[in-house]
Length: 435
Image (cartoon, rainbow, N blue to C red; front, side, top):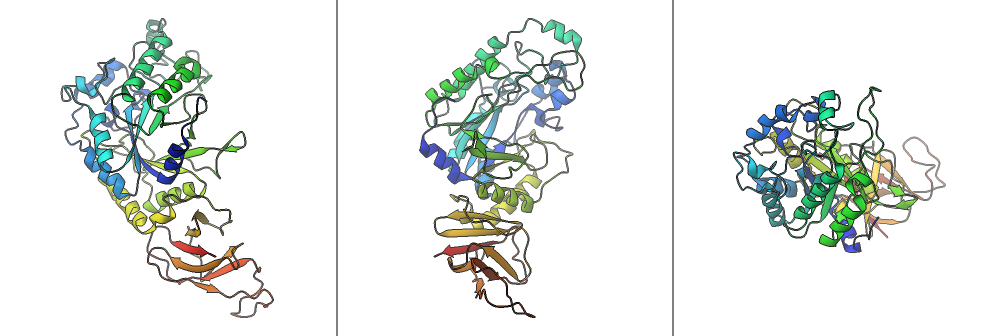
């Protein structure tokens, strides 16, 4: 890894905890997943109608940014270019951009996004694909749409990935030069030594640090944006790790050393707009993912795929609004919070900020909850959603359990008496004030 980022950038990222990911491009028109070109093995000719008909006339990034802020998010990351190769800004080194569509003459969707985020107080990140299925010098390989097309492979035999790498570096330079301070550079993705899974002949080995010239690329990013954070997908260590579509089972490490991390998750299993996808996660599930991430010293980057006309799906907006209502009441258990040294009870998570410990109850206990290690260490407890007191149960370690009399509780355990009715929030939180 090249020089590490400033400590203040790291702490800002940890304090943010919750961000918006936006996957948007030509794939929003077929509305069948952002990998539609790969999955359906579409040629550039097959894909051309989406370029010809890209007309996001309802694009209003101010609405996007306000939806993110309303959900309690503190930063936003936009796909400037996904694997299809289409650019959302007027790149100096490509004609395959929004500015060259019939609708988008001279338009720069990235600039509008950046300005809207800054107006709403959001940090700004750029996703940029290392892969490019449209570029004439990007070799046909294991993830390329034409990986089974022998005629296309023959025509592409002379492609030079280093010419493509020059293009990749040039576009990265544009993004980090023309839009002011950028907080996050989110590259995607490397796949060195990856072979075809079907065992058939054809292109196999993927691409990594040598093809991207990753060390050189990262050094350039640092030079252009000294305060930026860079993710881990260049096939060399980055500033933060990016588990995708899964939650780690604990704080993440590299070679035994804790690392900054951010789980990236979708609302419905697809990153790009997928009209017929019904696998929508509930607001409760997503809040639990957020809490789980923070309890393990990570962030959550939650994705929305806008429609081809540039709007968030109503289901996405409703989900963000529900999360936002939970965050309105419980933000202080998330924002700026860190993991706790204490071990939570079953199906619960702790976060901590100073002398306040937050118990997030994924399941609502019947009557009481026992908190090991907290006996004599809590001076007051309350439900965070309404600041109503939660009574502490006196603990006599010598008392024998009999009928309704509690006994046999360890002297270092704190017992709380809970209301029978679960608070009507996605995840109830008890705020514990430590002695």
